[in-house]
Image (cartoon, rainbow, N blue to C red):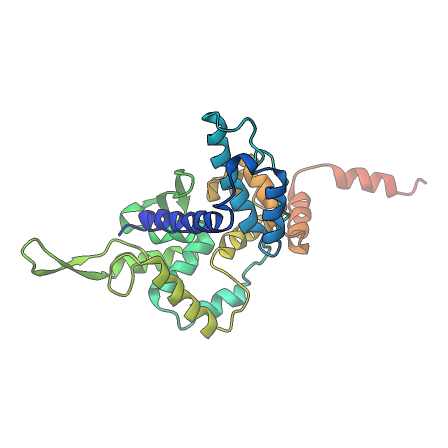
Length: 298
């Protein structure tokens, strides 16, 4: 099953779970009596799970908006609910943690981590990357990908630390066994950059399980796969990349990228140091002005 479809099924399963819980908790409440007090009840009931509460409020906003459209109710009480505050994750993988994960990991998991770090894409997008999407221009490898969530088409240049692993993967055939039209088993070469041990696309739950086993074996706690995208943003910023440049790699719009950077990027000394060093290297006359101001008159 294609990874893109797997991602959509996982999202549908999540929302079905929310809808089932909404039905269990509020199914007996007539929609005409669903008012501000019900909104506050949701907030109180999920105070320890603010993200879940906000998702349920958002679903109620859609459902009650449809009721307004059908003229079953006059106003939508969930139109502008005050959402619960959520604490954004700020975790970043250190280089030592990335190295520890890769040490002893299978070739597939090692390449998965490196792709997550150096392409700044979501795990689902990484699992869909294929050898056919790799191109080379002037000695630089690029990967063409379409993001699941935004449907954005990107051509991402590969970092020099990542490129050798991708070249090795292309040079090393991975065979997958499939049943042909006559029920005979055929061996075909997998074009996935990150195939499962059978050469087939990963079932996401199996990928997550294998990832967590390796993460724990490496002694890494409190870090998630999704944190690697934030890690990429931090490393890009530390290297002096501008917000438009980071947006070009991640696929975010510039405005959205700026808001994400404001939330995710810690105010790190490394970032400040890079900024000052770039300033120092830029052609300007600041030093002359300062020296003139400090020079003693004779």
